[in-house]
Image (cartoon, rainbow, N blue to C red; front, side):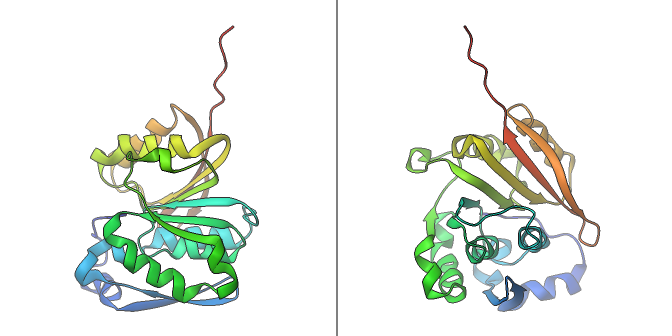
Length: 216
């Protein structure tokens, strides 16, 4: 689950997370996202990194129409919902405990004609990866947070990526360890910052798998 320690804004910042729902407008749709801080904590609220990534996708920086997309650590499912509205075939993932909550948000915000193009599936990083193919686009918002998960997260991204895949990670660089994960990525991927939102201090990085040259 995309758990991120909350540390900015004090009581005012926490207030929005305790709200039972929050509404956004993307792709000419009003998207009402349920939140459940009380039972699921910070995994079940909308973080700035998800909103900024949705704005980036809506702006058309990446053409998602017809692409296969997987969202890691989806939490509320906002990014996957927006990707679906943009015409992608989306697999939205998180741990088992979040499945019912995630399904509720997705089903309530996707038109009936798009629901057969969006799938919700449990995924624990580093486990049962053989159940997943490669995808055109891999997205994650605020999933770089616990250092002990970094090897499994990297293994998962590597498994889901072909040499033609695009990885998009939206995050705040709160600690040195966050940069350490990007350095781990750079051993296997070409990583470039493609967007920075100064209002929220959120960075978006894109990554492409390095081509492995075969030895003669």
